Length: 470
Image 1 (tube, one colour):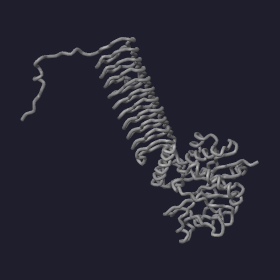
Image 2 (tube, rainbow, N blue to C red):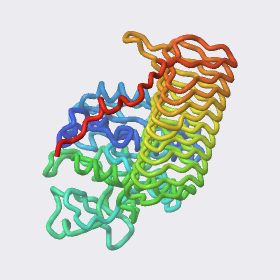
Image 3 (cartoon, rainbow, N blue to C red):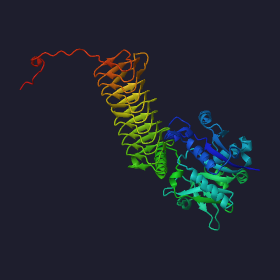
Image 4 (cartoon, rainbow, N blue to C red):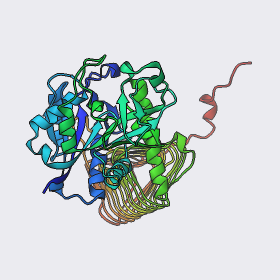
């Protein structure tokens, strides 16, 4: 019995026009590389149609700087396999390399073919192609779309007498064929045995002297072009301008998907969301927000204008006020951050913590109900629940060579303009008077004051106040 699906990612490209000194598949796109997106959408599609692990296989056909591509993909996708295209002789040659190097490739009923440089592709497109091929009992399906300025794309030539089609490449098209606006996406689903037989027939007798994979589709065969209205799903990337265009399109697709799941956006055109971001229903995202990396935001949160959140986790009902920056931080439910606050890596804020304006927290754990409301720096610290930190507080954690830890217990009051010189511990229920520098441990329930005595000289201010001359 044949297995269901083999999938091929064409990832042998050099990408000279991108000018990035990277093999094309590894060009950056949002938070990942170009090649990641078709691989991940294929995996979603496999899950969608309930394929078991042994019923599907993804293979990347590599070529230019293949060692780098294989190293990157092997570390990220353990079940991915590879085939090498030794020379860049066209997409048809790439498929021959695939079948020559993968013994089990012929055992799949269908073969999906995608390009590594189409990052906006969605699993829903693959599902529609798969459904159409099965419903119409086809040997092959090519995804197509309309392009008002089709230069550079292969044109779809539909057979006037039946539903079949063929593709003519730009370099080989006549003037009338170049006027056709239905174009080839480069995405195909083909019955494997049909594909193998057709690959035997193609040649390089064309203006590019390459083996075109598109030549497997011919009039009179059981093949159809499936026209999609969403042209953005098929954007290819060959230049930095096209990369920016594709990133913007992918960003908008991601926003639309989050909106469908109950996330409200205020001026979504100004928002950036990376592909691995998760957002819970009921959350509101204000303008100019940037959500990056593996950020996870819970339900009913508010992310105010200009906030930047990188690879952080926020539980439900968290409020991030305007222009705050969070990086690799964890914030539990009903906590508030900002405005103009910064949470650096390994910051953990527990329930109902309040971090106010111009406060920076680094590598610290703040228990439930802690308040650090104004103009403070907390680094390498543990602060107990319901402790209040006054304005202008600083943990002096660095001695010039090493970082040291400050521990403050629960239900403490730390007065404004105070400092702790680490390593130092303050127990529970302690009171630190304003403007104190704490250098010694404080037992629970204690009071500390560390100030120079105030000296007041009456009627002496005139000696220090300078008046402007007329």
